[in-house]
Length: 113
Length: 115
Image (cartoon, rainbow over all chains, first blue to last red; front, side, top):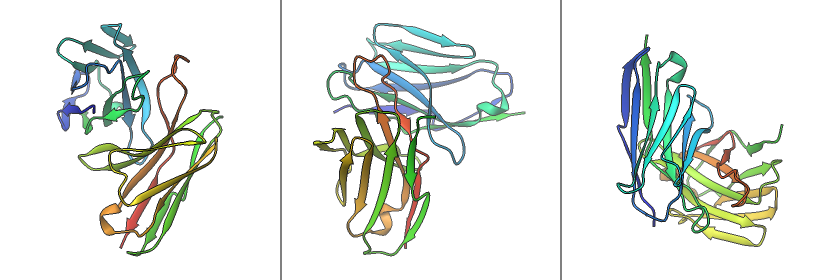
């Protein structure tokens, strides 16, 4: 089955700097890769996703890149703000096969003022 | 707004007791999931269901059972709770493939403590 590894487990950056979180996956059949943000005491919420037919996707200050050959994908947050502090999870699934998300272990991102 | 609702929000129970966590949704999704969240381990799948007559084990199903009472309701039971089942439990729903909307919608979570 699919296995997703996420690094780093914790990340601390200065406000205004960029943050990058990386994930690798094991199953080459996976073709859908979402990222979730979980604020303290709240539910995970989808912030961006990418499918395997696309190499990069942007939404304002966040972007995701995908390298299918190397089986890794990354979340990039630019111009970080205090409200970006949260736990971020990557995930992967095969949309028409196993069809269930496998999550990474999570990254606790702290933005220092 | 369409949503995913979990009850209870918090529960403390004793070792050996049976407990049920409930999930209901108004999103009209066919697919429902139960995940467990532990620090440093991410979200791990316990059980999932793609329709009312479909129940599947996830990676950590031992000690748990589920019931899909209707399209909108999916319950998780701990038959005999043990302390290492202390965790944050999330229900989630998703649309079917081909709709263009593959992401999950999570419930607000149930924090379960087994003493």
